[in-house]
Figure 1 (cartoon, rainbow, N blue to C red):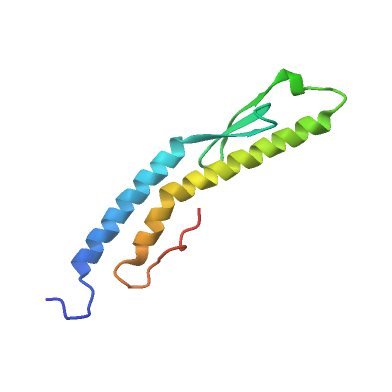
Figure 2 (figure 1 turned 90 degrees about the horizontal axis):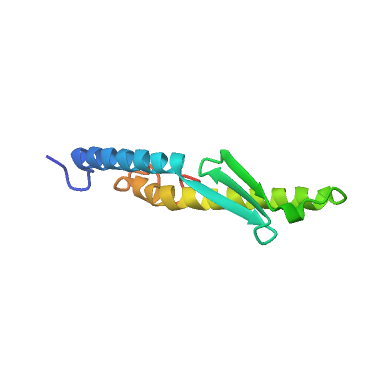
Length: 117
């Protein structure tokens, strides 16, 4: 029997198992999700997974100028930054709600902001 003010261990274990299942599902979704970053109004596009693994780089031929390699380098770097930002946003979208659910009935096992994406 649960004493007043004491957490129900069965309920906590069920919540923990549900959270673990949700976490695994979110991780599986992130493993296959891809995001694209761009720079120069789409002149350079970089696609990465939500786990920041590069998938592809697309460069519009009109931005390729042998006399101005620096601009192309800047555009690639900008597209990479945009893709990483998009991946981090997707991670937060998938994992953020799980972080707030880790409080586990006030046991101090987590809470908002505990897991960073």
